[in-house]
Image (cartoon, helix red, strand yellow):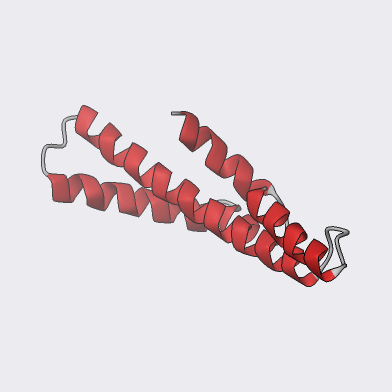
Length: 100
């Protein structure tokens, strides 16, 4: 995780470079929230484009359906929990969306 490396580098400048310093943990937690958010954003764009392939012509309707399904994924799965916890599962949510 790039933000964990950044936080560890800042901690290294202060003499506490073991990966568990204050900056490392802060940057790691910010990174998990960012990755969950970027994963949801990528999912929204994917769903919006998929709605166009299913014949929904109106751009507002496509965006509304995509937003609704993104909320369903956020509240109906564990991504909301993993996005705000100190686990690395939000990165596994982001990666497949980036490969599509």
